[in-house]
Image (cartoon, rainbow, N blue to C red; front, side, top):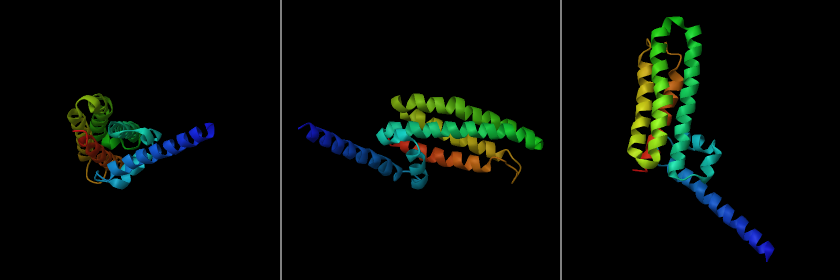
Length: 164
């Protein structure tokens, strides 16, 4: 009898795991970049037990991590590309806004009023784009990071819209 309970618990755990794994797949299919969505969510162990709100929060964390990484690249670029100081100053301000304001707003609002969370994620993408536009054509040391930020924001926004 004890063995039967253990087997039943294992079967139930597998079924729950498959069902939760399916939420990631099903959710990502509703975003503009299925492959990126899967990659971002599957790289975080929290996704295996997350609901849609949890998946959104994981992606907001990814925005914060990329924003922090970009701030590090901006600081490094001050040393290697001093002629771009004005554009780097603008990007520094924009990415601090993403990390300090937009991420905080999204995290706070996602459970209560997801519309505000959506607005914060949209703003993060706009801030990144404004940063990119401040460089002379072809001279941005942040192009790849900015493009990645915009893609992550698009995926995150799609998931947050599922909560509306």
